[in-house]
Length: 296
Image (cartoon, rainbow, N blue to C red):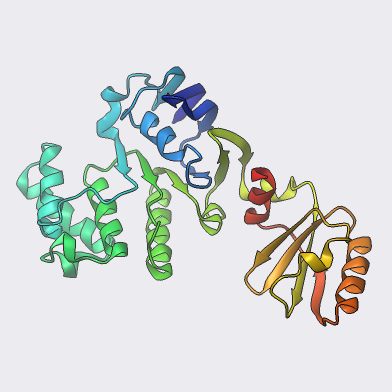
C-alpha cells in the first residue's frame, strides 16, 4: 500500500524528515508515533501528495504519481479544515459534490456515514458549534464520503476528550475490519498500543518499527514500578543503580539493569530518608517506556 525509500524533506536549514524508509501493508492500522516536531505531519503530507520530497521515493497504492490515485485516498488533517458557517449536513453534501457524486447518492451516503459517526442527530448544527470531538467526527465523516481504500489521519484526537477518543478509535477499528487500510499519526502512547504496527519517529527519523508486542519484547532494560508518597524521589535515589526515573501518575518507573540489586538499593535509600515504600516490584514495559528509551 505504501513504500517510502530514503525520503528526505527540509525546510530551509531544518531537516524535517531524514532518509525515511518504511512499508505499510494492506489491511494494517499503521501508527506513526512521536513527539511534536518529530516530522509526522511532513511525512503524511508527502504520502498524500500535498508536498514533494527533496529526495527519495514515495510510492502509494503502487503509484509514484500521487495525483493519479488521490480519489482512492482519504485524509483527515491535524487541524479542522471544514466550513464552520455550514451545518454538518451541508459540509457533507459539499464534500460529496466535489467528488462528482449524484445528489441522490450523496444524500443516501451522507445519512449512512453520519449515523455511523453518531452525528445524524446533529446534522442541522453549524460546524462552528460542535465540540472538539464532534468536529473530528465530522472530519472523519467527510473523509469517508468517497469510500477510500487508504485513510490517512494526522493526530486526529489531539485535544479531544477521552470518551470521544475512544469512540473515534472504535470507528477506525470498524473501518479497518471492513477492509480499509489506516495510517494514523499520534503523540499518544495508549493509541500506539491500538495499532497493528508502530513506527517511532524522532528528529525526523524512524528509530524503531514493529508491532506493539514486538517493541515491548525488544526493550533493552528491566523495569521496576515504585509507589511511594513523595513527589520528588530523584535526589533520594541518586546513588542507586538506576538508569532513568519516569513518573507514571502516582507511581514511578525505574529503568534498571539488575532488578534485585536495584530494589535493595532503592529500599535502603528510601528507608534512610524516612519514607515508606508502598510497593516496589518488577513490571513489564509499556509502549511509553519503549518510546522514552528510544527518545533519550
